[in-house]
Length: 374
Image 1 (cartoon, rainbow, N blue to C red):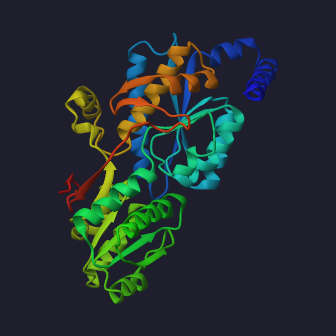
Image 2 (cartoon, one colour):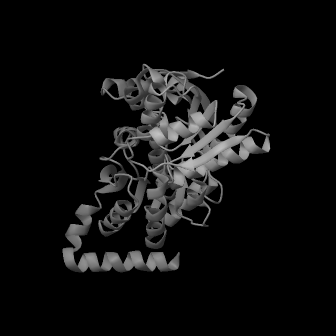
């Protein structure tokens, strides 16, 4: 941490020499928080959820007086959920002298970006990345306000075993850190319970034709399919599977829980099972916040909206508790306090993960709505 502090002090000294003291004073009028995630690309809808929640938190905190006499300022960066672009974004955030980040969204982008943040003394809270590897490396400045795949996978797996009871199952994934990771967690859970996983293989993100996969699933006579990945590919698999007479029920993680899957798959999305954070927008305690989103014409139902709001909130409260904008001090406050947020009372363990979080199994409907699965 001393190295990070020295690096920060050195950067400030250089800035002062180049820009002058007046420039630094002007830059310090606000506390900038970078919002890093997909503005563009196939999963930009999830980025919208993240930005919606985080920007609302910034707005409401500022309305209540800001943080330590300063206003928060949200600065959006587009990583397109691409690992290489995420690294470029992380370096840009560091070069822009921003020390707090809410993001990234995709686990495969969050992990390499977090390496840079840890090295450069930037505190990062992801409200969407669920792969356990992100917080398993002993980093001190990496947190998340959502649960892990090591929790979500068994939640899905146990539901499959206890409620679906498939005779012959397939587990498909998109070969990416998030998708393959959670698919593996589900596979391990069901196999321990004696469920036969007849097919376990990956597809390539961006593919449009899944006829070969569907033919294989039909040949193997599977009656249940778990998919680890995002909605663009699963939507096509659902639609093409229905067209080709594939008779199997599907399930996926929060990465497929998007209204666009109904737009892609149409009637074939009816009955899809999805694990998601609980519907925080349905909590009566959040009625005023939901109304605030509605007044701005914004949708508060997405799975990452409220966790993103909470990420900004705990970050701000950490600054207030320490009366500081020092990321190391704020990180210490996050680990040693409990925060009352719209997503519940949040407490972090030494790795930066929440001590308590739960996923819920929902049934998706073709009209883009969901209901708790029975």
